[in-house]
Length: 187
Image (cartoon, rainbow, N blue to C red; front, side):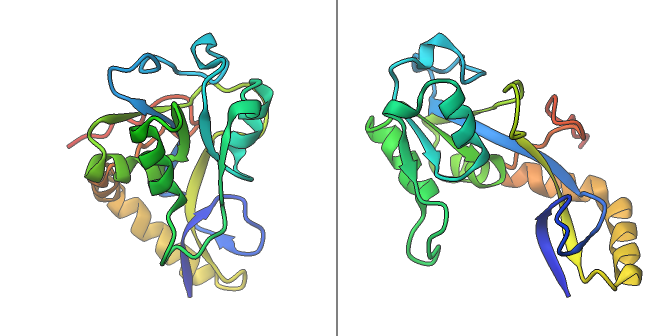
């Protein structure tokens, strides 16, 4: 009846209003030489090994920044019951096999919070050109189910502060609607 976590604009479903906006994280060791990097064009990344999920929007930006020659690709489509490219990437950063990695915030943020205290994630908010590096996340329902869409929209509107609090507690980085700055969440 409902698909939770559907990027806004998917034409195969009827999208609800978005219930959060997030983006991609550049993940590096805390207090390491790349800790202040906020953009892939930063000269500090030149000649560094950057991990990226193949076929993801950041892969295009890694290529545009001239970082692909030394990049390490991680599979996008795997059986997540037995494989975790995201965890593999984080382990590679911790071991020094790669210098940095880029993960979708709702995946990377909770992993960092739970199991990787020596790493930090910085939202990539100013990458030029396409593809965009942030997405509004909705719920998807059947195209014919306008009544259910309206019911979910009402639920989202009434519970937005609670939804934000749950996501922040889990470690999901939230952005404003335009993807230009972190969302200020009230407690």
